[in-house]
Image (cartoon, rainbow, N blue to C red):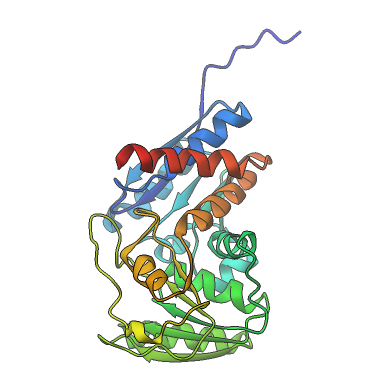
Length: 285
């Protein structure tokens, strides 16, 4: 019989800025509770100037790991010891595992996006996709689509330098890609799937990406990575044009579930995670 008592909780968290309106902790706590794990997940507001110190703290506090959200998904890479091959290809990290003092970066965003499409019966094979944005989420979605049979990727971004850089990376990996500058009223190329991977429409804003919505047609797939609110103004307008919409909750849940598996070796109930988020938003509304 082992009489050793351990009152210490395993600590994890999510770093970003801003982060107060991010509900990730709700679903992670629900998953840990369902798995009967004595783990604590913290939402930690970290400015860019303090990113290096925050990552040093992961080792100092012997944290199991972190999630990483905007604006740190790219810049955090320089402070890690190792990258998973997919994260290296994407050039962005959303999950860090502390492996006995070695910090390993992963990217589960793209997996989460693809699983969210899959549960909605959507197959991307041979299709074209338009991605609004060229940041960490856009990169994850682009490369995950590329490695899962997408035909062509259109990147629309305000910064031509960042947008063209992503297109170049996709082409270097053997994909078909095109860049368009994100200007107000832009006409979306004829495409099967549109993804808003920008922060436009995130709470408390109710903005809509300034595209020409006449380009959206019935049956087209329109997705948003924003989770707060789940039903963004962008998705609401797209639905009114007859599009099939996919909100950001599925992507959040499935990428988070994979992160928990990386940290603990256990895959959580995605139903429990999604129900906790839905309850959270019902309470807020």
